[in-house]
Length: 320
Image (cartoon, rainbow, N blue to C red; front, side, top):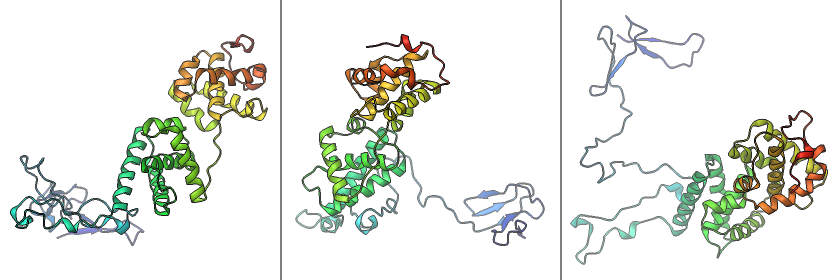
């Protein structure tokens, strides 16, 4: 005696199983019998319910010894064959070996060396991305870039880890969340120079390009890591943009200009930060911040936003 109801005006909605006597009651599922029971009157409303749980039972003494799963990992479209090949593990019983003691099934391992290399690179990319808290879409784009480069064989002789690091740098730039070479280098085992070389070679091989980085790309992250308030962040962004518009910092890296702008804005506010603190977060040397600061200091009065509340007036800012 099963009562079903449809949502009004929705002919395509699935029928809802409910007790005819207590339609608002939340049904209890009996997993052993596969029944759905009304808790109010005990009526078996539905039977033969499909159990969507795991297909095995795990006992405490077996948990650490073997994996009961028979379905393997999720499909990986980046690998040849969609990662649907079969891997036969090393045998343990007598039937797994011939009379000479050799494994009977060693020839059936079907994962190619190229797939194995790509799988290792994907793991390395995922590890690096996790260390600097990058989201899944960046990892996916990096994996795709690595696969394209690897299949082209245009960077033969370069270490896969170096290519993976350069692909991660490019993916960050393409997704609009750029990281500095130093930040990528910090989570990788590859030198900054080698990542830079691979970066240029990959852009050439894939005939792609990345947008130029600007001071605004790093400002919010640097200010957040320094614990600066929103007002100081907005002022630093304004100062950096104005300095570039007035051509006060020709040839200077956007990162060093951003660091100098943060230093100037923080010194004018109540939340003062030293060059050392800013340099540690931005990954630039104190002397680099000083050089960029000296270029923008003479016109400091023109650089601040009109609504900025000064704790230290412009004429009292450090001259360095």
